[in-house]
Length: 403
Image (cartoon, rainbow, N blue to C red):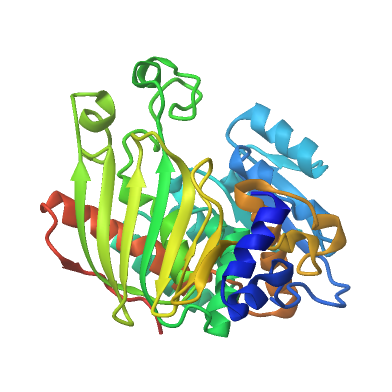
């Protein structure tokens, strides 16, 4: 849409909507890092795949003191990215030998997250961990008890929380622009591609360095719900209380017939009820012609449609006043981040925000965004949803883990 056509479109809308959208709606989300902090947070990084995509070394109050991965090539990559000379063969080795670490960033395989958090916190380290937080209700209970007992800081690195559209949406909620949010559509689509190659390419991310299928192979879609649920838990703060989920399966591909989870589903779709009486339709698909994470929030005053690649622009509609595409601010260009971190980053420019928020929380001695309660609120509904799908959509209660 050209600037001229966009201007004309807004002029056709009510004056209040035009005013709301004028200037790209640059809001005031607030400073997200300490104005003055001299202390350094000494961090260790666990996992040389996804773990190498964050920006700890760019925060002025953080220094990477150690890195570890089971693979030598990934250890070397971590050392190069973070300019760190201390590498360990495993997390266990780092726990035994490292004496100058305050916190760790855990980006190991999902099936190891809860165990690695436990090892690290028992060592006395604060933890930021990749998603999902856990893979069972028992692990969820263990993590909650661990964080309470240790009094250490825990953060889950959910990228959806800091996608620019999610930051924008939190501001709309604060201002009451959409009224009461009664329904959210939240999607995470990650197609597995060529199904024949999926089986034969033992160098892909679905195999370990010995050519054996790893934790990713056949994982139930709803065991990975946080990229979708982050758009409701991380925006309105609501909790999922009940869920009914259906799964879709086809053919006899090894992905759904030969996996450690006994999972028969490629795709799962859940209808969830929230603690405020709202509704969520949550999709997680592994076999589909779609990619990415997105959401649409419906309020009794208005609706915000988050952009989807090649499908639609970010669009705001206010009842009885009109609609228009909006330019979501590039928050990474603002003082929400230290100067060195003001650049595009992965997963919708969220990586720098996640890194900065964890370090800032430690510097300010506070709980970070997406702490243990939010982490479990984004993770546990998916575990229960998968159980529902195995029971042909039976509605199940989701246990709560808030104080």
